Amino acid sequence: MDVDARIQLFDLKSKYQFQTTPGVDKYNMPLYDVQIQPGAQSIGMYPVYQGFIAPVYINGIQVPFQTQKMQFYNIWPNIVQNLGLVGVGNNTPGPYTLKFPILPNQPPNNPPFDGLLRGHIDIEGIIATNDNIDPPIVDSVYAQTLIPSIPTTSVDSAVFITTLNAAGQNIVVADSGVFLDTNVNCGLLMTPGNAPYGNAPLPGGYTATNNIVNYFTGEAYVTFNESVPAGNNINAQCFYYQSGLPRGVLYYDNMLTLRSPPDIQYLVEIDAYLSPAAFLNTAQAIPFGYMAEYIARGAARKLLSDTGDIEQFQFYEPLFREQEMLVWKRSQRQFTATRTESIYSQGFGQGAGFNNNYGGGVSL
Image: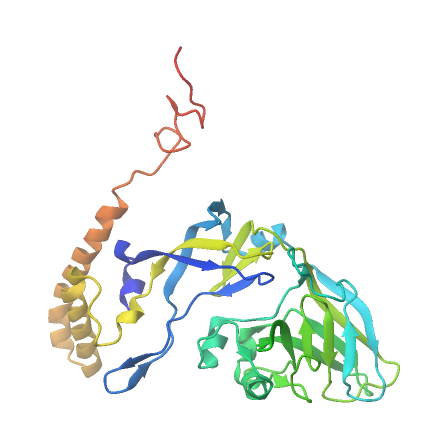
């Protein structure tokens, strides 16, 4: 696990690709499945890649890749839709049937799938579920225990339903980033709480007509955790979008955000450095033979430091550093094999001479 942090090897440079899901704008970095070592020792979920780097291609077309939220949302602002009145209290907790007026009553049969942005759970939250399913899709029973088990800091809600109780205090309901197994376009609603595990399921359970929001139709069914006085307004906030071909990507919090949200499936391809965690299993071979001595000396270095054998550690350290430089030299040769393009070089789309793409010409 130290290798990718110490040196980024050319042999670990890879490509991550996936298909988008219509209406889904956020995609976590993938995680390795839990691995079982000999002796039945399990190795937990780890990110498959160290990180993502440009270029990014969507259906073969390069798109801008950003890591700063300010720059990304200056181009693609998340404008909160304050919908105002969507229901009225009746002295009960509910259930209440609410309608977000910016969407039709029926889901579209064909794209574009315009709708509401969805709540999201980051990879720390996925790890907390102990199940490598992203996003979490659950039945009514499992939802009661799953929602409180995910750290509040891992949940990014996108739909909010608010009102006041008899004392004038806020009652807030938000989507949880967890979805209904019988309709994955329905997000499960919850009561947001304090960190670390304050989120709570709503009373009454979860079905297609209880405590969910449909992101395509804008219909929500809510049972609050306390009574709403008669006549009190029930309001809603959300993010509305028009879907289409994504033309921008933000990488932040180990998550890729696409704008516009996709209307159909698109192929996303992005450069990445592989985390060699798949080879933590002792039954697996070291992926590249030239790294064998480097890995062995690195392991010995760890053992010596843990046992406090400083004298032997200092003896091994120059030998470990030598192997590290030899391993890095292979990647260095590859990285320096290609000249950095400039306006004076003859790369594609650059230079002069016979290149007509950039100030070039043909002598007559």
